[in-house]
Image (cartoon, rainbow, N blue to C red):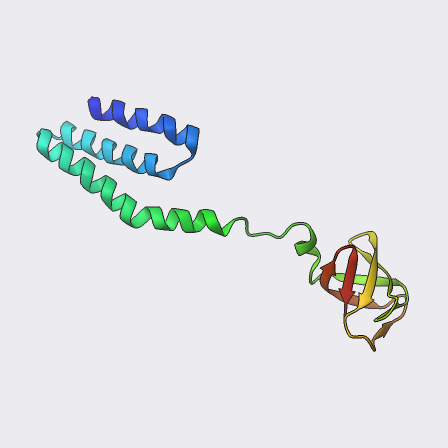
Amino acid sequence: MWWLLLAVGLGIPLVATAMPEFAMFAVGAGAAALTAGLGGGVVPQFLVFVGVSAALLLFVRPIAYRQLKQGPGYRTGVEALTGATAVVQETVDGGEGGRIKLNGEIWSARALHPGSVFEPGQQVDVVEIQGATALVV
């Protein structure tokens, strides 16, 4: 019974802090409770708690932190615009630039290569966003 109380008690800081280590200790306490339910003595219960918790910390924790560091699998903001296709509204060149329609909005644009010129109606690809200007090819 004490192991189950410990498992539930470890769930509270898990929810409050979102640290996966508390979940690993809670699973260890649950395994120790199962050992107690199967008739194991105090020493086997403690060894199961320590063994399961340590195994989870050694093997699952690095995987969990790697997943947390990767972040979302989608791009937002200016990153989402890179690689998008736009339609030229006003002539775009490498000097003064022009205007394009990108995702329903009008953006100032400049050709990535100075000698390139794109006429209205042409489709271009956005290579990079610099401030409020799209570099296109």
